Amino acid sequence: MTLSALDAAPIARRSLHDEVVTRVRDLIIEGALAPGTRIHEGQLCDKLAISRTPLREALKVLASEGLIELMPNRGAVVRKPTPPEVLDTLVVIGALEALAAEYACRNASETEIAELRAIHRRMLEFYARRDRLEYFKLNQSIHNAIVRLSGNRTLVATHDTLQARIKRVRFMGNDRAEQWQNSIAEHEEMIRALEARDPARLGAALRLHMENAWKRVRDAL
Image 1 (tube, rainbow, N blue to C red):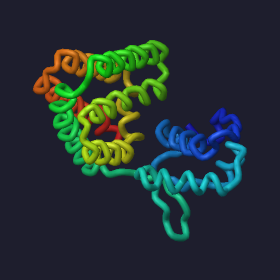
Image 2 (image 1 turned 180 degrees about the horizontal axis):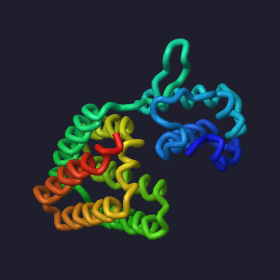
Image 3 (image 1 turned 90 degrees about the vertical axis):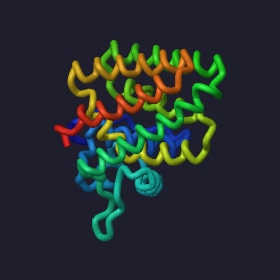
Image 4 (image 1 turned 45 degrees about the vertical axis):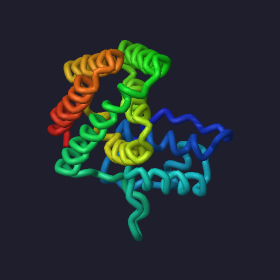
């Protein structure tokens, strides 16, 4: 996908900063702004009907997330993580989520677990529509929610940082029907393990999911 092929509507002025960050982040995740390419500010501003100031502020946020790099004399470049970096990051995310599982199973209320099941159901609705981007956002929100249920702020902050760095790579993992279907099954197991308040089962499911995430993306890298 290229920027010229995008059907990008102008951004409403309400919550402009957040809207710009979200829209540019989505362009990176979907691959419209490909890894390793320089972001042409003028072209992107025209597409989104915004000035350079809110775009540059958004690029700073995305740089802090690890999705782009601000290069001297080159401007902003979409970051392209190496395969070893992706593997290392997924291993650490798996370990963090397995640690969070222990606390989440103990601390989560029945209401919070029911809310997570509801998010899972909404995710399945996007899967049925084959809406990969909205599916992906809810997919990631489930992982983030499990970690938040741990109640450990340091764990949450570290997990958020690592998740942000490889959003584009994770999105690539469901580009084939079988891979996507397998990911759905793995998420179902996570929810069931949390509902059973079984930390060992949930931790194992989360680690396996990260191991399989690597298998799903390594060839594309």
